[in-house]
Image 1 (cartoon, each protein chain N blue to C red):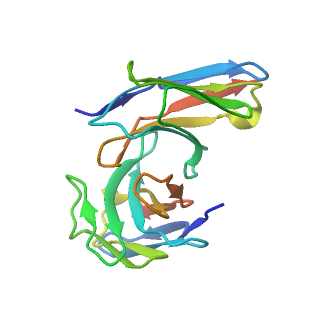
Image 2: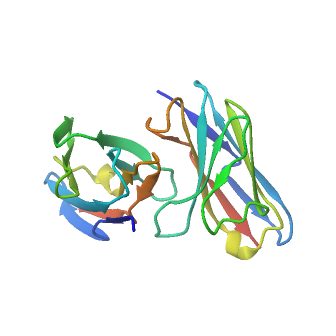
Length: 116
Length: 109
């Protein structure tokens, strides 16, 4: 089956610093990648949709200058949380689809970010 | 607006059957997904329905009624490892997933 990896799996950083999270599709080329955020006991919240080689489409309320997304290749997308604050502490999950947006999304294992 | 409703929490007994309901309102419709999510882990795909009816896959089955905007996930022969949150998600006309808050399923011995 299709495998998506994320790195790191967890990270602790100090307020004001930046953190980069990588999402890789290991055995398929991901035309589209999605970035989600999930707070405890809440559902997944879509942050942005990115297509290889083009700018990401951000959901309403998500600051594109704070959450930088780069989808440089068909197997790698990165999310950089800039100037992180404690309220950015969350579970960040990426997913990827190999074809049309209607295909099943394959999820990465998630990255737990704690900002102190 | 778009909305997905599902119960917050359900409790069932090991070996029994449980049905988790989901109602949806989306702008256009391109299918209904069910995902399983264990605590601290990412969701894993369970099922996809785009036509009316029941799709059976081992111990898990999923049903869809488009006219009623309704779906359910049926879990048979419950095992302790089935304790997890079950997420219902509808796909709208833009192929965007609209997620429910999830149903936490507690299995008791």
